[in-house]
Every structure is written in structure tokens, then in C-alpha cells.
Amino acid sequence: MTIEEFVLQAIREDIGDGDHSSLLSVPCDACGKALLLVKENGIIAGVNVALKVFETIDQELTVNIFKQDGTQVFKGDIVLEVEGRIRSILMSERLVLNIMQRMSGIATKTAYYCSLVKGTHVKLLDTRKTTPNMRMLEKMAVKIGGGENHRFGLYDMIMLKDNHVDYAGGITQAIRKAQQYLSDNHLNIKVEIETRNLQEVQEVMQAGGVDRIMFDNFTPEDVRKGVELVAHTYETEASGNITESTILSYAQTGVDFISVGALTHSMKSLDLSLKAKI
Image 1: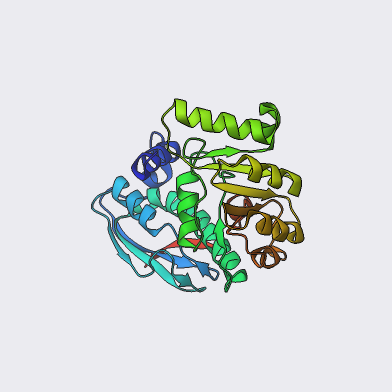
Image 2: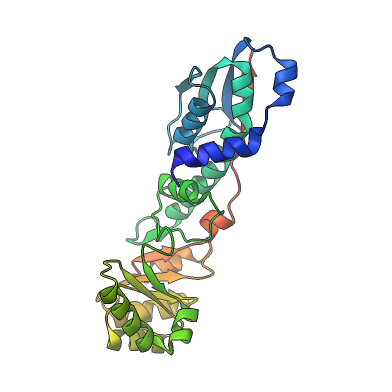
């Protein structure tokens, strides 16, 4: 899905056969201005998507941007000013806010988690624990906040999780099937495998044929041991119940990546509002 497709679907969902509240209360030719205001500190995100919303609803709306995506903002800051037909501004209001509040919340949380591991070489990743049909925007917000995207969907990386391993008959069998599948289908995508303990890490090392090994729900001590076992032969990733209070201890193990599902599934939207400029 493209941003344009997302915006069109969102507008259809929200407006339906008309914004009756605005149609009854505002003359069709009435024009005005509105300001998008910041009500709490954070990282702003979604400005470019908001522009697409305004443009799609009314190409004659004029938008002046004061804070770009990725900018740290503070309570009282003005992100943008929109000017034009008041009906168009009101039809855009909730959709713009919903998008920007959620994206800014994700960017803010990502930036905070990145600050907790500053000084280490680890890269912070998101996961597929996203809102259906909003994954593109949520992963965009993670990058705006300083994180990196893991695979976008099921199609751009082979990720052999615990259930795949069990259904395939074990670590070695799962890896062999993955390699055969890649060959049979002429695919050139990375293979990651999830391990549940150090014994499985050793089995992966013996089998070979992967690009990244995930240490799932390991303690920091076991992640460190896993990193030593892998010895830079493959990329390494720690995942599972990693919180703001433990993330630094994981980053200090030497692991290459840390994935945190909470960046997108347990974030708090940043408080923003769109107010008429009188």
C-alpha cells in the first residue's frame, strides 16, 4: 500500500457521504487558518503524510511547515499552519491528528529507547507487531525516531521462528528446507532463525546456511554467551521481553540488533491539536 492509497482509504472511512457537521455550520466559501499545536514534549512525525491528507482533500489548501519530521518539539510549539476553505480544514483535522499523534508517539518512544543504548554499536529494530493497514506509517515513524526496520512483512525475509522449527522437525531440518526453498524458487532474501537456548545456537552453527541468529527470551548473560559462540560468523539479534530497564544490559553484550515490539504495539500517542487561528 502506498501513502496515497492509505490516505484515500482513510478519507473514505472518515468522511463517507459528507462531513455534515461542517456542511451545516460553515458556508462553502468561508476561508480561515488553523495551527497544529504541540501539547507535550516529543519527536514530531507524520508531517509529510499530513501534507498528503490536506492535498488530497483540497489542493487549494496552503500549508506552512515550521517543524519537520524528526524534530524535537516542546509543549506550545507550532508544527504547521494550514489556510484555505474552513470546511476542508475541518474535514482534514481528525485524520491529520490521528496520523501524526500515533506516528509522533512511536518516533518519541523509539528516540527514547535509542538514547538508552547510546554509545553501544547495537541497532534498534521494530517488529511486525503493528496496526493492520498502518504498518507502513508505523515503521516510517520508527525510522524517524532513529530506529531501523526489521522485515516489512512475511515476504521480504525468511524468519524461522519456534513454531516453524518445531513443525519442520528441528533446527537443522528447518534450515535445510529454507535453503532448498530459496533454490527452488530462485529467491535472494535473508534467512533468520530464532533460537530458544544456547544448545540451539550451537546447532545452528553446525548447520550453517543462515544470515542472522535471534536469541529469543535469553537473559543478557546468555546473549553474551551466544554472541561469543557465533563469533561474528552471522548477525545476531536479541528479542523478547526487553524493556527500558534492561535494554542497556542487552546492548552491552555485543549483539548486533535488538528488536522491540513495544515500539509500535505499546506506544502512547503524542498529544497534538489543530486549533482555529482567529
